Image 1 (cartoon, rainbow, N blue to C red):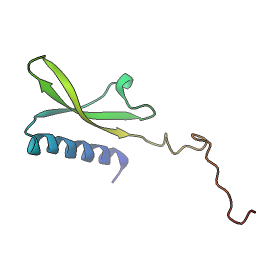
Image 2 (tube, one colour; image 1 turned 120 degrees about the vertical axis):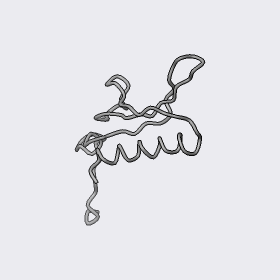
Image 3 (cartoon, rainbow, N blue to C red; image 1 turned 30 degrees about the vertical axis):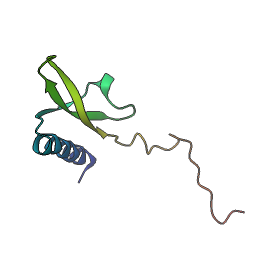
Length: 85
């Protein structure tokens, strides 16, 4: 499966837990760029509605990280050749 498909599969699993095990209906959505996990291409979310306040509360998120965390130099990781002494 592609990474984008996996993000949606995970999001659906989160929604199933809320709806089927906890009996809490949720709305699936995508976070704004400002709310997206730092470094992620995008972030999806399940949110529950709170009738007393008229607001939503974030239940769970799933992130599409793309290649942002595997790019060379991101963490300046260097590997030592085991043959070197």
